[in-house]
Every structure is written in C-alpha cells, then in structure tokens.
Amino acid sequence: MRFFSVWPIFLAAGEPLSDAPFMSCEGTDVIKRVTWEHVHILVDKWPDIDLPHSRVIRKVLWAITHNEMLEEHFQDCGFALATIILVALRAIDYDDGPEEAQKMFLYLTEQVLPRLEPHMALAARDDWALDLTDLRIYPFLLGLTPQHNCYESDLRIFVYDLPQLTRGVLHCHHGQWGLEALIPHWLRRGSCRTEDPEEADFFLVPWHTWCDRIVYKMNQTRREVSAVYIDLMKRRHEVLPHWTKNDGHDHVFIFSDQGMNFFPEWRDYIPNSVFVVTEALTPRCGPSCFNPWKDLVIPGHTDFFRARRMASFNLPSEQRSLLFNFHGRHPGLNDLYKKNFVRGNIMRVFDGLDGVSVGGFTDDYFERMGSSHFCLVPMGTSSWTNHLYEAFFAGCIPVILSDGFKVPFEDLLDWPSFSIKWPMTDVSLDLYHFLRNIPLNRLRQMKAAVDAHRCWFDWHEMSDPTVSGSVCSPYLAILKELERKQKVLPQTSKPFWRHGKEEA
Image (cartoon, rainbow, N blue to C red; front, top):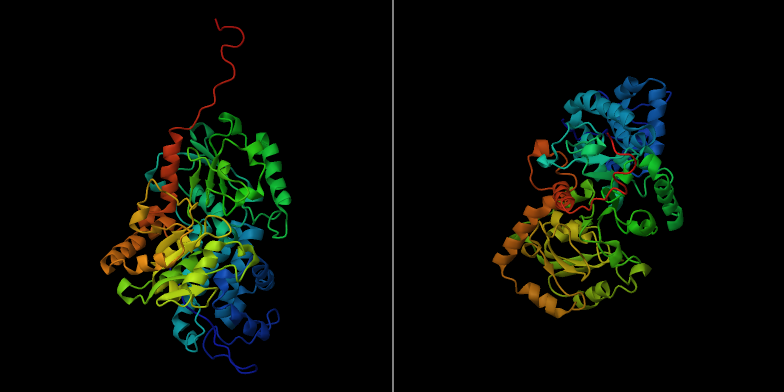
C-alpha cells in the first residue's frame, strides 16, 4: 500500500486557493468554504485526535456521504477531504464498526490518495504537507492484513467474542491501556487462534477498560468500573461458557496500568486465572496481585506516532552531548508526586550539573532523549513507568531507579547488557560519577544492545511476522511465556467418576 504527503494550500479569505485540480476549495451547498479553511489545523494532529473530536469531524463526513457527494467534494477540495476521512476513521470504527471503517479506509487509499499524488509537490509548496506515515499501521488495526503465523507457535488460544467490551480497536489502541485492545486483536489475526474449545490451551477474555461505551468515562469511580466486570463474571456461564473446563485456570485476563485496582473483586471471581500485567507490584494491591508461576509482566504501550518520532532523534553515541536526562512529573509539578522522593532527589541533586538535563515537561523532550547517553527511569505513582520503554525508541540506555520494578521477559532478555538498575535510595552524585566513568566503548556496546532490543517493546512494528520475518516482538515473547506456563498449568480433577450404573 502506498502513502502520500498531501494537503491544500490555504490563502486569505476570499482568494482562490489554487487553480490546480482538487484544490479550488470554493465550497458547496453541503460543505462551505470556511469549513475547508478550518480543517487545516488538523494537518499535524490527525493521528492523535481523540474520540469526541473525531465524532465532530465524522458529522462533516456524514453530511457528504449522506448526500452521496463524495466525488463532488473530492473535485472541489480533495486534499481536505482526505484529511477529514483520516480524522473520522476513529469514530467510524468505534461507533459504526470495523466493516464501515474498512470501506472508508479503502476508498481513501484506493480512490482518493492515488489521484492526489501527482499534485503533492504543489500541495506541499507552502508547508501544508500532511505526514501519513502513521497510516501504515491502519490496515492491521482495521483487520485488513492477512493472517499471520503466530511465529509458528503450537499454542492454541480461544478468544472470546465480547463485542460490548471490545469495540473500536482504532481508538482503543491508544495510550497505556492500548494493550488491552492490541493483544486480543493480534491474536484474532493469527494462526494460533482457535474456535474449537477442545483444542484450546488458553482462553483469552478481552476487555477495553477505558474504551467500552459504558466504561469510557474518566470520572467514573472504581466501583462503577468494577461493576461491569462483576456483571461479566456473574454471567460467566453464559458469556464465558468454557470457564468450567478448568475452573478458570486456563483463562487469561489483561490488566494495564494499575488495571487490577479497577477490579478489586478479582480475588472473588478470577483468583486462579492468568494475569497479563504491566506491573507486578500494583499499588493498594501488593504482592498478592502477581504470582510468577502463572502471571506475566509485559512492556507498557508506546503509541506508534510517539515511538517513531522519538526514533527519529536517535543519535549515534559519538553525537550525543548529554550524559543523562529525565523530564516528567515530579514533586514540584504534581500533587500525586509529592511523596515521590526519587524524582524529588533527581531534581535536587542533578539540576544544573554539566551534561545533565532534568526537569518538568519540555517541548524538545524527544530531542533531549535522543541526545543523551542515559535516560533515568525513576518510579512513578507505582513501581513501574513507561519512561523505561520510551528509552528504547530514543536509543537511550535506561537507568532504572525503582527497586520494585519487575521488568518484562526476564527469562528471555539479558537486561544487564542494555540497562542499569541502581538503588532508588542512592540518587546521589555517586550515580553521576558512575555514569561519567563508563568508557565510551562500553557506551557504544550498551547503546547498540538497546537498539537491537527495541523490537521487544514495539507493539506495532512486528504486527505481521509473516511479512516482516522478525523473531523479535512483544507478541512473540508473550507466546513463549504462555508456552512455558502451559506446561505447569494445573488441571482440575473431575469431581466424580464411575458414578451410577456400570455399563454392560
């Protein structure tokens, strides 16, 4: 599939935009000229437009399609129409379903963009080009890619169909909770998925914590969120009919970013099930929330558009001017971090030192990461933080300052070869001098290892192993972990045998 960088050139109100095809943008009876002029603010924002704003633009697109005037509006302002479709796709997928989103995506990529390509240079003349690199992951997210081979795994996983809890992958894959949408979606597209419960090794129960039509309200209490899950589990004999096969031991639940706190009743309903989590030590839950023999830790999710932007600033070791950096929330910025002594000490000890960049949020955060040999990874509101995984995209050697941080895939990856773990109670000049005294050759080796291991934390690059041929992916690591756990999965004994009359 081909992608294009195109956008109309907007001039002062009343002036003709262009005499070029598809760029007059004079407006129609349905879409006024001023609408075309206002849409241009979405040029560099379309990959990260949230659902409410996508729904607004969806209404503009609906006005065009309802009047069966796609071609007329393409002829009038084709570049703006392409942008409207890009923004509206998220709402179409969430509200109307993936089939409708697929149709609009195919119309965009097969009928709109190819006709605009010859005029790309003119459209970009005044820096109005639209970067469509992020469109690369859409075929996978919309279910348009071929079935992949699950890295030739012999595992068979049954994925429950729960449409009311799993709508809108295109929207719900964003943010730290995106894994709850991405992992089930990836499995649905793979050869390791089975619809035969008798051959299933595991049963995945998918749910989108913050994206379901009922749950997606940030002001809801934990009790309201957990009520959705309690209702599901109370009806498990109806919606999870294979639960009794092994008393839930072979059922898998995904909890991202303290997700278990939104279902504290898990002990009553799913204590024996397999938990796939981003942190082993969940606040207010403690060690009992994670059992290494059955549960597994996975990397946090970094949005594709964010990851690729960080990667674009990944400099070679010889060109990095900073020893280390940390920029993010700390006690001086956020009340939730008032008691975070680790981040507080980072600001107190390292601010102003030569070769160091620490502080709050900054517009050139990606550039500073890509210019640093090391990225400090202090604990956040809990033991884990996504700063660890962002470091890999910037090619920055992570220095973990969180004693309780259980890193993912420890049995698979040689973490000491590409990271440093330092006691979080010793955020002092000792750390500064230790990092300064690491030889350049060792820096190069560790940085090369960081770059080589990035694919284990990239939830998007390895979406299709059949095409990429990669043997490095968080999905592959999950399958390997489940293969190992499947060997020790307890089997529930049958409660009765030889009960009743003997057969003749």
